[in-house]
Image: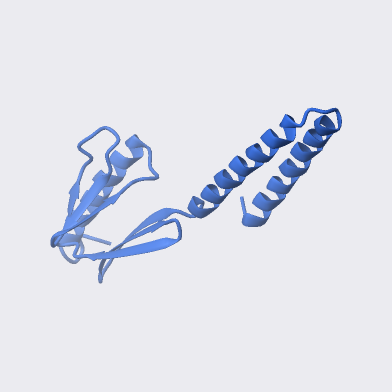
Length: 141
């Protein structure tokens, strides 16, 4: 959802909730509007959290100049440049663990947005690509 769509959805929800709360307030049930406002506040917090993390992603790029790992979380960008010749791919040790990339004393964990099966597949594929990269010209394309 785009931010505009999210705002329209929240506005529609707010209008509906406040209309129902107004009806009950007019009938003497003063506690209903209180819970309506609390509900709308909770939904607003959830929407803000969703909005901040909707564009979270990980990007791994392997090129002739090296490997770039980019982690974007809550609008913060962390970039790690790694030497493909020295990068080791560590498969997740635990069932829901992340893939570890280690190079020259730097460790980066990736795979947050993949299922466990896809995480295993990606780790194997990345390992194979790094082996091909290390093989030199013709080994990696």
